[in-house]
Length: 243
Length: 89
Image (tube, rainbow over all chains, first blue to last red; front, side, top):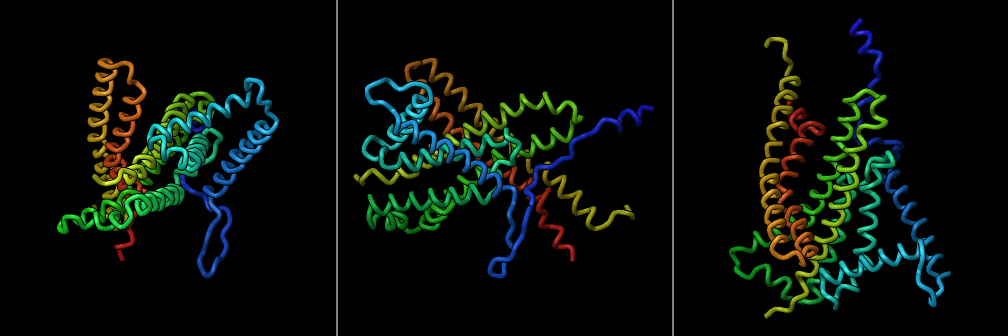
């Protein structure tokens, strides 16, 4: 009787992996359309719809009147991102990088929050975070060559004995940045998957909501902010001309 | 002991290793706690600089978290992408 009662309660199956939906051959390599691609597509669609709506709202805006409603929200976001960039990189350079930082922040926030929509967050795939970190890596060294010229290379070999450590440190930057974001979001995804598998299906309607608030909303926003802040810090390290 | 296959032994060892790898979580916990405590003390001394203190604290905590995440990555690799199973043959 007891075991019958236990088996009649249905459990969700534990599932937090990446699924392959379609595979095809690409120059002899087997490539897959995974759940990450689909989630990125949905995230992109959300951002695109938001951007088009914001564009229409801005075009129709009356410059004589104070902004209201949706336009107010858009203005607040732009202002917040501008302030963040200028606070982190200085007024001189902040405006130049604000567009990259803003789009990075929007993508990270929406994709970290996409766990709330029942998607597997795209940032819980190492491919996504590593690609973002590579973009930041290129920007860091672009800024380095632009503002420090050849000194950017020679400073690596400054005490010649320390040069291996310096070079490894430069290479470790994108790896540790991407692993930080990936690990945080993946740990949330794994924990939520385990908890959904642990409790009976009927309880999953209400109870894990508290954990979604922590793992998806709090942790996701903090990690997006941290990634953008670290990007700013690493890029602005190259700005100061040597004494 | 006779009935344990080689794969079973490797999987059991990997599961124990994954659990041991997560001991790495102690360090970031202590570090983040210290950072948060110092941040609270700094806000108490200088409430006007709350925004700057908050962002500096979060950045430091995120960097301190890295070592714990390396342990987490090792645990996940041992559990779901086990490299040791392939060494059996």
